[in-house]
Length: 324
Image (cartoon, rainbow, N blue to C red; front, side, top):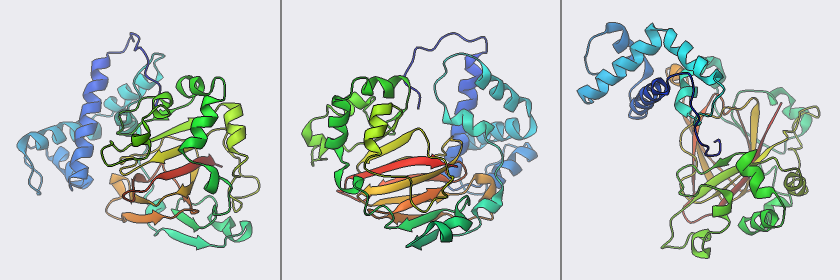
């Protein structure tokens, strides 16, 4: 998520972006309510204002029809949105626009179940190293010093004591507040202690951020390494993410990154839910699994829609990066 910036004027009409974003939102809402992409396509092709088989309001059906007709019958709409992304102006980071321009998925990537592994070596992991299949390696990060030392206080001390660390997150990296009313890392590390500890009267929080400040990243990596089972020539990203907090984690989304992701669960238990892309829902299953402290997840988050939930009362902390 880009830092909040003053939006400068663009030559392209921004109203069109808002309209397309809203239509994408309505489309995703229909999918989440139980309707299938095939139903919306059929509705668009029929060009009749008939409600889908499952009950929903006429307004929803009509809006779904408008969206489906625009995106399936008029390719120029996609071209307009793609042109918008190339305009050199500051636009809000919009998942809806990304979704509108997302390539159609190859459904072969999601036809297998989640693979659970233990005691993995680099040699026996090699056949799976660049697979699109979701994989969980149990206990692979259990002995990392980070599993003992990383917590809220560790990162507060690190950022308070590193000149320019907070500014780097706001200006160069990313801060992800998800559904939390915290809008910067400075706000996170100045919370009242009651909220830090998720006391009964406090509002839960869950946030994440990327670390691209060289000194911060070097300090962090003294406490963990690239997972030992990854190929020797696999590149370690120059940016690592930290995610931490309570209860509801990330909302259902895709990540717009260039490579595969690994994420080590260092504290707490976090449940992941994976949904295939809408165009693959007829051939692929949804999955749900729980990460235990010390587990490492490998996932193509560009292809699998995912959200997370943390076990009630527990504090979750993970470190994540990409590889390729």
